[in-house]
Amino acid sequence: SMKSIWDFSDAMIFAMIFPNMVGLFFLFPEVKKELARYLKAISK
Image (cartoon, rainbow, N blue to C red; front, side, top):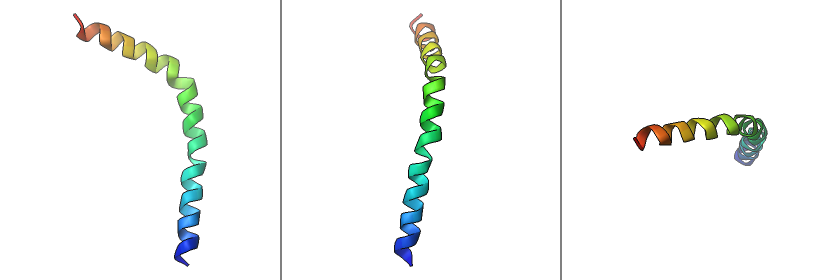
């Protein structure tokens, strides 16, 4: 039924939160460094 398809879709989207959050956690220092470098470059 359509409800079970929507429930499965919602569950898969929810499950994708976890690998994305892990990636954000590990990449945050690099993003912060690159953002600071970019802001410094455009302020010149």
